[in-house]
Image (cartoon, rainbow, N blue to C red; front, side):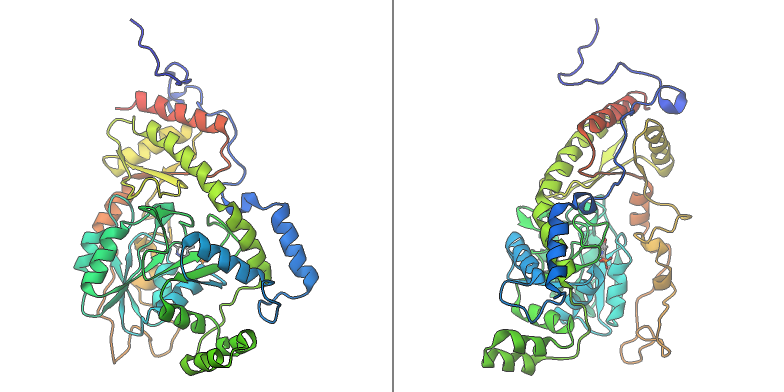
Length: 442
Ligand SMILES: *Cc1c(COP(=O)(O)O)cnc(C)c1O
């Protein structure tokens, strides 16, 4: 008796795998550009930027109420996140620095962060003279709450959970541990703009959150970022740090003598992380397009997930909230790194874009193993700051062997990037290709 194909399964009969000389399952062409936000740049962004240029005012202050594109972006972002305060800045890294200062993190403090994140998360901690303490990730490839709690010392001030590749951290457990142990939480949402955990927008759950608007993030202004928080004091401190003349500009804005006095009273020195009106204009238009991008990536991920689950011996990534996942990537694990390499090669031979996630040879700056300047405690300062501080010397050591659990998960992992640009035809062929490889896999 011939087995009926499942309804809606339009895949061809089993064929020889492409890696063994059979025909490729994916013949439709993939997208030219695998990014997200940049692919959505259209007349809206062009128009908005043109208006800014025609106005000849590229700087946010000194404009009539409601005229600044940066403040329009901040308002819309605050609304979408359901937070009180948003400060637009010029990068995700500067958002991290201003956010840490906002939270009162200071020289010599220890800050927990995951072994799998972009190196900028750790670099921002060092920029303010604090020390990154590197925590294992679990099978969600986000910070492991068990190891997080183990690594808290009397010097720990904050934890930075990073929602990597759009997948949410276990914010319930992280917030519970943080509040019980008296540390603050700064969510790094650089890769997860629009994600949620149990219905709450990422970035709005911890004491503060940060975003990036760099080219490769979900929405982009080329460069840019934001600090978001519900806490008044965190907002004030971050706002002051993001602009060394903050009180001065507020004086021009407020027209309220009392408010001006207040900013002058609480001011301290800062840097300049302000966002330009050109960037604000792009960010505002991109933000309006964000949820449409995510509707599409999430739908594609669900299809790929169902197909990947049929691979013998597969273990799917643990997603802490599947509804809140941005859907911009999919990860599964094989029994060991050889098997991960083999299946990745077989899938790629069918014409699928996917790959393994860890190699000692390929210096991927998202993996602690390749954070050379941190491992070697390099510094731009003659006196060795912050590592060689005599007042609060560093008690953290770094080795390539320090996170075996993270290295274990990453070396068994296969990742599929997902963009809204994948056509239905292409996605259907990828699904069939995965099923084809799964059927011949043992
Ligand atoms: C991109 C990124 C950053 C830094 O953002 P920039 O805008 O490039 O400074 C920080 N953390 C993570 C997880 C990132 O992916």
